[in-house]
Amino acid sequence: MKQPTPRGNISALLLEILTDEPAAAAGTQDLENAVHDALARTADVVVDDDLQLTLFCLYELHYSGLDGAAEGWEWNPDLIRVRQLIETAFEERLRSAVPVGPAPEPTSEAVAAELFRMTGEDTGPSMSRFVAREANAEQLREFLIQKSIYQLKEADPHTWAIPRLTGRAKAALVEIQADEYGGGHPDRMHSALFARTMRAVGLDDTYGAYVDAAPAITLASTNMMSLFGLNRRLRGAIVGHLTAYEMTSSQPNRLYARGFARHGFGEDATAYFEEHVEADAVHEQIAGRDLAGGLVEADPRLLDDVLFGASAALLVDSWMTRHIMDAWAEGRSSLQPDRSFAA
Image (cartoon, rainbow, N blue to C red; front, side, top):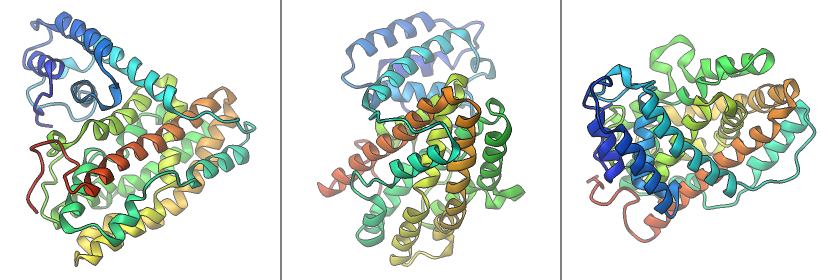
């Protein structure tokens, strides 16, 4: 991915450090000190542009990498230490915000029932209904830009969990992920279908093309998945996160497809959404009972984190949706200032 534009002192320091070779680089201690200071000063790490972009770039070293950054930076201990500083503050913020209710019995059916209850509660504005009925063509493109930060690598953060699971839960996750990756057909990968949607409406489908346009909350939504996926101790949380996604996907995607069709966009634009209508109706059952339920039955200690991951997914998604919907209600772009685009 091309290097994004810095959003403050920390991301500027990191991107400058990454232009050098790990063995010769200087400045990592300055970066660590700057992160300590920023975390002490920030009003909210979730919507701090500089910290969220820095964390996004640090995570990207474990995915496609960043242009100009040597491969050896991925597991550089200095950068891992910096990443963990931001991760700790980010996780603490999420845990403090996530509602905690009574836990169900650690059985597959009880866990699935609780997750269906949680995901069935409508607590905020509906992006899918707005897209279906009211969004104009420019808002549809902006909606895709926001989603592209994750959707162009869809499934990858959850795949980190595969070697961390065993038995029934592992088999369920592999079954879901095989569909996400197109069942062996590259053109059917969900990330490829999303790229096709972007091309159909005249957007750049290059991975990371719109990172500079994404607000902090959008980066935070993707960073949360990487936080859960890359840390084995949070394997319950990434399972809960994926389960919540699968349980809240089918009907919204039906409405998204309707919104694009309403503006005359054809199958190239709607195929991604239509694929999820059918696939996720099946995935939600597998995710609830076999993935999340199977994991908790095998290791009841992970119940709280499964519920945390699901709750965090729903909460952060609601924050992101509100950010976008509030901007549109005020007649402005939800993207970064000076990063909006012409339809």
